[in-house]
Image 1 (tube, protein in one colour):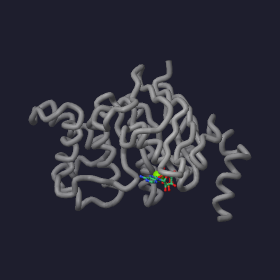
Image 2 (cartoon, helix red, strand yellow; image 1 turned 45 degrees about the horizontal axis):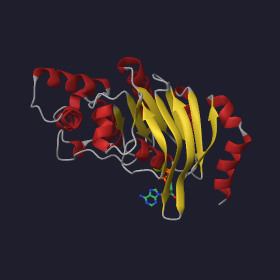
Image 3 (spheres, protein in one colour; image 1 turned 90 degrees about the vertical axis):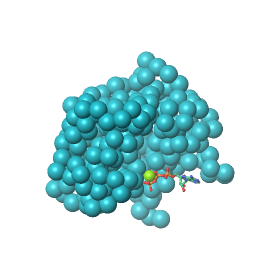
Image 4 (cartoon, helix red, strand yellow; image 1 turned 30 degrees about the vertical axis):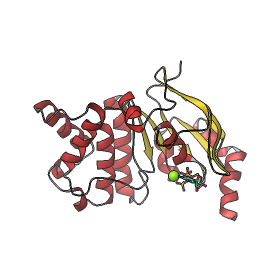
Length: 243
Ligand SMILES: Nc1ncnc2c1ncn2[C@@H]1O[C@H](COP(=O)(O)OP(=O)(O)OP(=O)(O)O)[C@@H](O)[C@H]1O
Ligand SMILES: [Mg+2]
């Protein structure tokens, strides 16, 4: 049985079908890229997996259990974490406190323990924010806000992490750091990764498989080199450039 099994999922917003009969599977430990032009339905698909919106048709099974109808905090406790396209740290809280919020999301509020403190420090070190442990999130620059977003997601001890455009706005050096971090999430924490990204050159260095959405439909999937040469994929992107 697949680790994540998305079966014929459809989501409509009024007359607009944002996600149309999408089916795909992921195995545990994979890093899969999700691409497609603006408005293709990528973030909506994340919202459906994460329980932010209910969907109209289909079924999503994660780690052997259906997710249909679960609220976001229940999906989180099943082991799925996400980051947001626009980062949303708690700006008045320190990095450490932001990570603790992730613990609470997963386990409920059980107070600070030496074990939690050690885990928070370990996560912040992994993402490279150890020197900002007690810095308020509002003082962080963009790359560090993105790292904190990933730290907060990791704090919920996910088995699957959904990354929504973590590279946008980063310079080349920062991108290299971010790619190392995404590899480390899988290699060190064993977390399966589904990753939306527009920065194709970088994405291609890390992902093992690509899924392509266009107009809500999954138009192509497979190994990255084959997918980017697929005529349907080229047309989806060129069609956008012509608009
Ligand atoms: N809450 C909502 N209510 C109504 N329409 C929505 C909502 N969320 C998304 N949409 C619409 O659904 C379609 C898919 O949007 P979505 O944000 O999933 O695209 P995307 O692939 O993530 O695009 P981008 O690459 O620009 O982030 C768009 O037409 C969008 O306007
Ligand atoms: Mg999006």
